[in-house]
Image 1 (cartoon, rainbow, N blue to C red):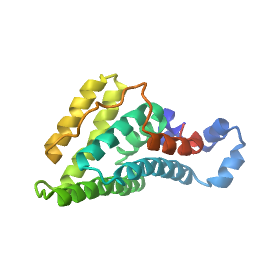
Image 2 (cartoon, rainbow, N blue to C red):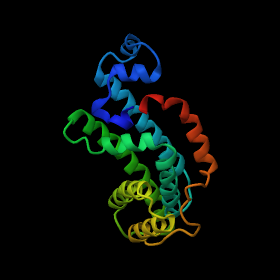
Image 3 (cartoon, rainbow, N blue to C red):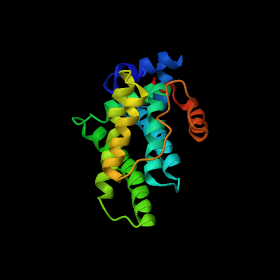
Image 4 (cartoon, one colour):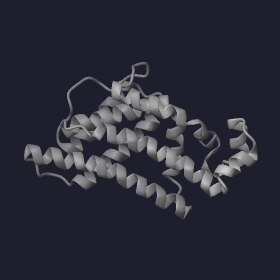
Length: 206
């Protein structure tokens, strides 16, 4: 519901209708609209943070880890569009100080995961060029462009070329093939398991 109508439009009555429960039942769990919105955003933050941590817990070279992360995110645009839509809107909620500060806190966690991997890789390979914090921010921002490319039907090969350009310009080298996962391909096994585990928690976001 929040994905279809927007964060600002979600109401208890609509959640009750979607969940096929009474309005008082929704109020019992979420006494205010702010509490309702907070829980939806907490679920979106948990979902993306878990996916990020799953990928960036790897000890592989940073270019490979980043490429896997972007591949997985590109698939989430198609497999979990409601989460992606809410995240995209949340990232522009500048006028609401509460929502904005909450988003910035979530985003810092994303930056930290990427930065940690870059620092670890550069330390292991003796590289000292670049600024890991700046590079992490550029790489994280790539997800928003990939979202637009996916939603507008840009071919996988072009998305792959774009992502490799970003990785090359930030990290100095690109990961080996294959190209970005295509529309019909399955998520990597670990991503699929994580997505399946999260499926039962997504009803309120729609």
